[in-house]
Image 1: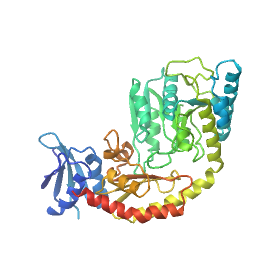
Image 2 (image 1 turned 90 degrees about the vertical axis):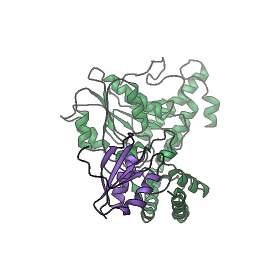
Image 3 (image 1 turned 135 degrees about the vertical axis):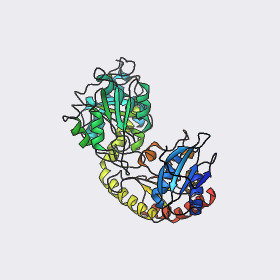
Image 4 (image 1 turned 30 degrees about the vertical axis):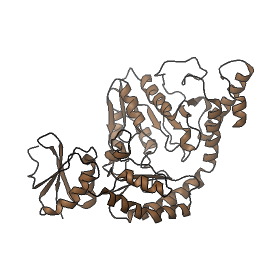
Length: 81
Length: 356
């Protein structure tokens, strides 16, 4: 976990079902600079697969997963373009 | 079929005349299935369902090798019937990963099957959700090689039986009649002559030791007749369906932000799966149903388990906004054109509805 990058923007998607976490990610990734990192905090079961799949389809980089302070999974995405 | 209902009602195990007639009809059904599939009649068992055939085939091979160990190896994209069967017995269930098209890593599969303590390996003939054909014959050959030393192979062929020839190399194999247009409630279990299969369930004093209870003779006959009919036109239907799916696949890929899933060429003829970014699977299913197209979905919101499809997850495919199309035997260009004319609007309104 210690080698995960610094998070520049965190999106709280707790309680929001798929596809809402990915929609939020797509709408707000433009708020960070290229090479910066967005974290999606989501308890929806599909986010674990759909955040990396979104990155593959949209040419962004999935850089891993950790957990928010309350234990909810947090998916990290680096903006590449 | 009507004659079978009139004459095949009796228990084929009894000795009175109606039972002898039923026995004759059941043997006819067994013979017809064996000839159609190119196997021996004594390798064919009718089971209560396709799922029952999977459980009996997999767990029976495992029981036959119990002295070697309890471990079951399978691909990560098998039907959930494999996972449920494996969870029901003690011992580890090792799942081997797949590539982006859903095809199992053949070398990793053989390596895992060759590990100490492995009783049986299971690999589907083709994937039931995305259509990708699995390398069953190559895996079967390798399992007899030095790395695996003859680990028996169970093949879940439910998705392909009737649509494509059976692969060779299995020790036991399962099919399901409703998948080829036969009645629900008839499964087919094939056990290769000489395979070490032991009943994993309580035994029953039947003619066929691999099943239990009173076979549904009229339904078995109907299943056999349907299989003969489907296999007789298999090649022609498969070629037509393969081309129609290729057309749909190309058109779907032109809609923005769609992940088309599964092997484009080496696949089941009638199936196409794709996922639409930013859309809800249920909204897509409902939108298509309102326009007269009944489709399935592997998205979590549409599943009784509320979990996304294990197949899509194992492939790294997008799991939300998922649609699975399956062509009927009668599907034609006009039906495909009608679908393609409404699909962009259905996707757009599902995306608008998701809102965010």
